Length: 183
Image (cartoon, rainbow, N blue to C red):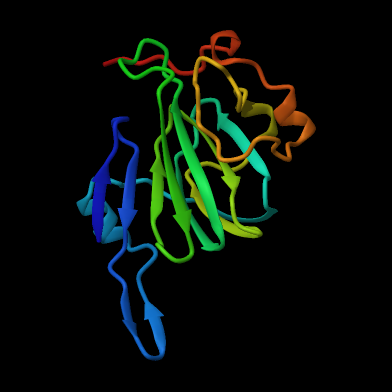
């Protein structure tokens, strides 16, 4: 596999080694030993699967301490996937990385604790899989607005389909300081 570092330290794009022939393809979507060699040693406790229609935007979400690292990928369709640094005081605070993930490119995005995450569906629909390092805890659920002007994320949709919850999220500057960068 190839690991591509991004502008946000710790956020990585992972391109698996894919074996293709006339029958189809095969690749390891996760191998603990191989990921550990790349410094990704998280203990995954839960796998999630969502399906969303074109134009759906989910995010930008995170959980408070102990936090929730994610390893995300798309198994059907295409999404624009985004990670935002929400660690107050970080040199990259408020900056984001966006990447197209698709069933075709088989890329994954690793999002460590201290980053908000969201995605927007650009195909007719998309099936999105993600591993997480802590169980879903509604009382620890947080988020920031998808359209925060200070983040200036170039979402590939003008009028996204959003949940009521996502519509009510605060701007980053108004969010609780759940994560502080310790350098």
